[in-house]
View 1 (cartoon, rainbow, N blue to C red):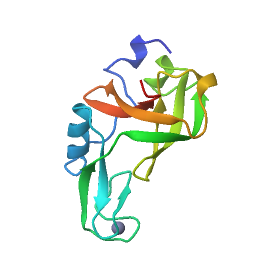
View 2: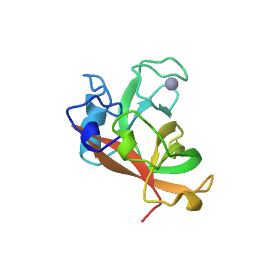
View 3: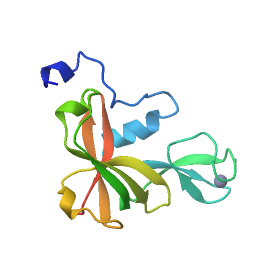
Length: 142
Ligand SMILES: [Zn+2]
């Protein structure tokens, strides 16, 4: 797949749905800040964002800034993905990270050679432009 075919006019599969509920999350991401939903009832964070706590079902949940620190749980280096715009981006490192606040997050590791990836390695959040939004990805601390 060429870069032209994965341009802005075509269908894309990497852009999130932004609605009124998740708007604060994406607004913060645009400013380089990661937000998590935090439950006041059980003092736990969760991700992806929900309107109730998945741990105790309380609705006493609010946005809270995350530290942006995480450790690598698992990953897969993707060499082929036909869904635009991923085809022009391979190889990339799809990953699951454990955020310092507890939640596990599906993301991508950037600025790190695959051979250097280690389970438990320290990572920090950074943001990549993706159309109208910026999405959180993770890299080794710089
Ligand atoms: Zn809770």
